[in-house]
Amino acid sequence: MCRLMVWVFLCFAVTGLYLSRLVLAGDVTCSGIVTMKHRSEEISITDFGGVGDGKTLNTKAFRAAIYQIQHLSRRGGTLLYIPPGVYLTESFNLTSHMTLYLSKDAVIRATQDTDSWPLIDPLPSYGRGRELPGGRYMSFIHADGVHDVIITGENGTIDGQGEVWWNMWRQGTLQFTRPNLIELINSRNIIISNVIFKDSPFWNIHPVYCRNVVVRFVTILAPFDSPNTDGVDPDSSSNVCIEDSYISTGDDLVAVKSGWDEYGIAYGRPSSGITIRRITGSSPFAGIAIGSETSGGVQNVFAEHINLFNMGVGIHLKTNIGRGGVIRNITVSNVYMEKVRLGIKIAGNVGDHPDNNFNTNALPVVKDVVIRDVWGLDVQRPGSIEGLKNSPFTGICLSKINLHGEIKPGTSPWKCSDVSGAAIGVSPWPCSELTSPGQTGSCSTFI
Image (cartoon, rainbow, N blue to C red; front, side, top):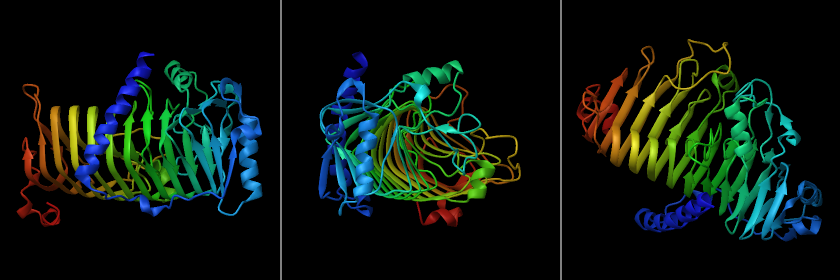
């Protein structure tokens, strides 16, 4: 009950934050990349025997309803309405030309019977499950090769009941990689909006090999100690818009990825055209993250108007030897952070490997990164930028950054190595490797 009251308080608090940020940021939005469609037909889960008592297993009802949508192929698509109630179900697949609509007080709740969970093949850009060799458990709500899919409503809840999975992870009894709450593979023209996501077993929203995806006006909640409960992880995807959302989880709020070591290099599909705007949240890990799985490359990422509280790291770009891939054209601006362990971190030594077959000569490239207009209070350490000796990070541009807090005696506020770029208006002043902008032409146009 206490946890529920905290969540309710956070949801009301963030509503006020949204309003204030919308006034400050104007009406700029990227959400127009996908059009919200009106469906010509509506069906209800109760038409297929769905019972919202929190006890009845509704797997057959969900699968029958979606089967009908798929095979009737109504012009303009079909809306599947979930009325108030708690609908317990096993995992299920979505289909094209459908809207999953959760009414107010509707909850789609995952069963905790892990033995009934289907297994699927690993993603080719990962080569194995992210946690364990072999396959992986299918996401709770899953889609592969679909288009024109909308998940929306009146702030109903999708509840992963992840604690049983978290405990298996803690106890070392997992047999395969935990399921995501929602995963969309090889899909396009997707909208996820006005829904609460709660207690995912693993990552919350994972669009992979997708294009034209909008995630907007969502709330994502999981306890601070819940392992690997990332908020939104666009992965080898393009044209992704993430806006106007509140995320409080046990891992990165937003993490842009593109495959893992030799498997991601071979698959060769980057993430590009990612916009992240007006996000508020808290986490023991990162607010805005790139990586660490970046082997396909990450480019053209733009994040702005970000509010972070009680964070491990505010802004984190992370990669490693063996990753390969190029991280470039990354811009993060207008960030407020408070009670943060490390304000900015760009590192070439983060993340594990799928196996021992990674190529130690596959060095990542990090270049043309702009971080500007950042304000922080109670920041324990402003920043760390550590490239690789044989692949220094270049074009790192910092501007108008003020990160305030008590630094431990004898500790340097910034730690830098194998990096070049420029800084202007940064306090505390960063490392000597970052010169004034007049000395580094590659940064002069940015700052």
